Image (tube, rainbow, N blue to C red):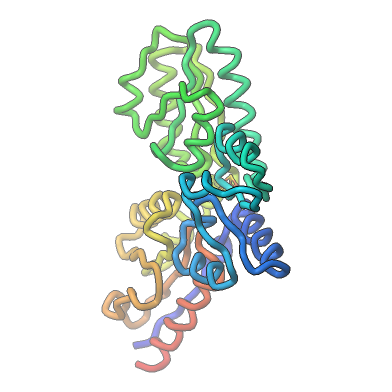
Length: 288
Ligand code: SF4
């Protein structure tokens, strides 16, 4: 069996994750231990690599027991209450909140402060319980309403002034549909374009990549919400799309003689993992 293999040049970590991982690695060059509040990246192999260097992942409950220590806040950001808690306990923060997320937090906070005296509502299209969404809801003292579909948007109270935001990694097409629905119910609703540009551009380029390859191996951690969105996108245009976390999950029976196989991944998939899959597939093609 012979086939071609190509890595999507646009896949790999987004800038926010690159920055957080770099800062963790820089710190770990001089100290052999660093706490991270939650998974620094939703990718188990990358986490194992960083843990081997001394990164320790803590839940908020575990972090609340630290005193006079150091902790990294990942790209997703945190609500204000987390900062208050860490400051109270004299914890030094290495703040890796992505600048795009920081800006979004500020916008959510200022819109909430403007709308709440008039009884308005801040609505966030995102995954309930996701760290970035928790950070956004925290800007509104917990009052923002999280929705995940047009169906849940139909449960909103449209008698109230409404502002709509999106988690940075959501599907731009779905967000447009939700925005249209909200506007149809409340024409003066304010809709903010808050999907990360890198994510939005990746959606477009990934569709083209999946269409121009006969089979797609999509690499991402099961926990990655961006991974789920991007994989579904690949599968919507190429039914021979397969999602794996590592080389061992690849079934050679998925591939055929003459294929041109595309390898791509989520914003939380490191380049080295795509390259590892590339080497494996090249070997498979050459040896059969
Ligand atoms: S997806 Fe965009 S906003 Fe989110 S962490 Fe990455 S670069 Fe930042």
